[in-house]
Length: 72
Image (cartoon, rainbow, N blue to C red; front, top):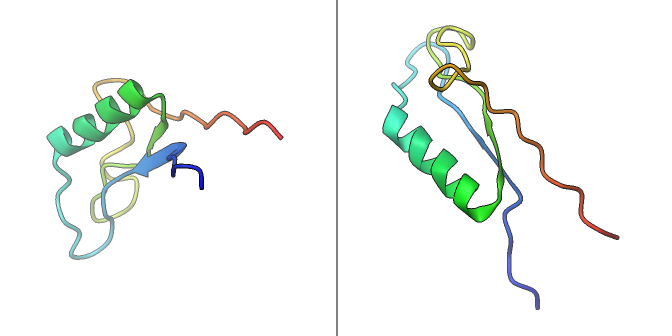
């Protein structure tokens, strides 16, 4: 059996009434771990009362990486 591999991580905050605040340090740890492991990373949103309330940028940059298609 081949080892399990993660190819893509999508992270983001909650939106809607009762949303919880997203910890920026948590997002950066996930992003850094993905970068070190060669895993594609997408940051979807900061979250807030409405989905686009906080935007999508991490220190001025959007993260929209896509996984590399597997060889057949």
